Image 1 (cartoon, rainbow, N blue to C red):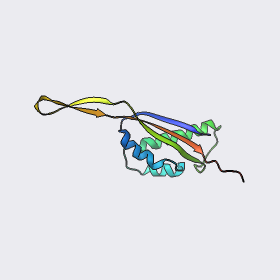
Image 2: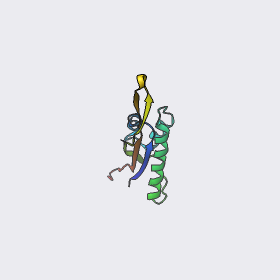
Image 3: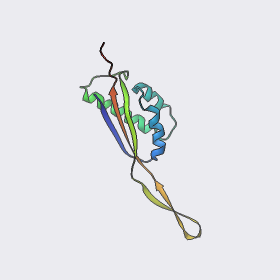
Image 4: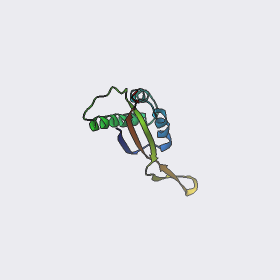
Length: 118
């Protein structure tokens, strides 16, 4: 059974957040948490908290069943662009340059590893 966690309007660009998301896609949860804990990239701390929320959601769905992180893995993680705040910065000769402050939405799905019964 899978569980979902969504983080909306994170004030970093989607391109920077996708670098962090690509790092943990398909990895087991305990390995992904270890990678995110020591990653210096901008969005790693927010993705780490989101992954912990997804694990908690999975435990809630499965009647409080504890997991050591050995059977859970990051099934899907994707980053979508959020709203863009448009600001202006003064430029030479009375002009103005447009500054676009980007944001993003991150979605994580965790699931158990299905091992076939033989």
